[in-house]
Amino acid sequence: MKQLLFYTIDKNYIKYLSQFESHISYNKDEIGHSRPYLGIVLKIEQFEYFVPLYSYKKHYTKYKNNPSFFFIYNRKNNPLAIIKFSSMIPIPKDYKVAKPLEYDLQDRKYKDLISAEYRYVNSNKEEIYKKAQKMYQAVTKHKNNFLKTIACNFKLLEEKSLYYNN
Image (cartoon, rainbow, N blue to C red; front, side):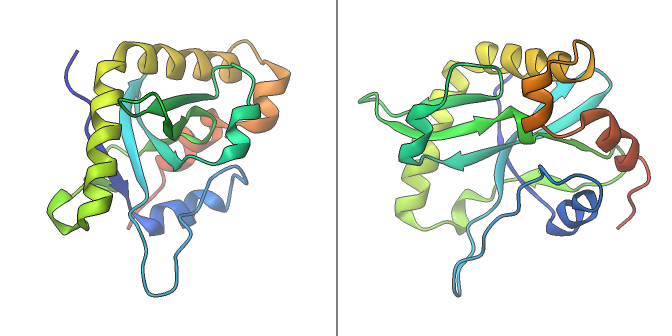
């Protein structure tokens, strides 16, 4: 399996999909500074999906183990972030709405954080891919009621992504 890269996603595409789905997350702009909306891209059935990363928050420790997320840890086993499969979105085939993160444009502290996350993600890429598949299947095929309440409607977003044009 090839290395997973970090990508950013076009804000206009997020805005477009948000018309149809309330579980899509926006990147919160800070005053005068906005970190990139960061994620990984995985192939799930006929679509590539952008799967967002979220900075770690203390309340995440209360999350029960399920296929909607994956913790990312540093070398000291401290949590850094989560990958949120419940918020993954399909990428339209004909448009480049996701592009590799430009590491050189990031400040030093953020580069260090991204590097630690990158190491952990790529040392666990098989498990990450399996959880993404499991989440997709649970929501689209098995109709898991709990996961459907917290996840994007993947089939609807796949359909809407086909109609997106910049």
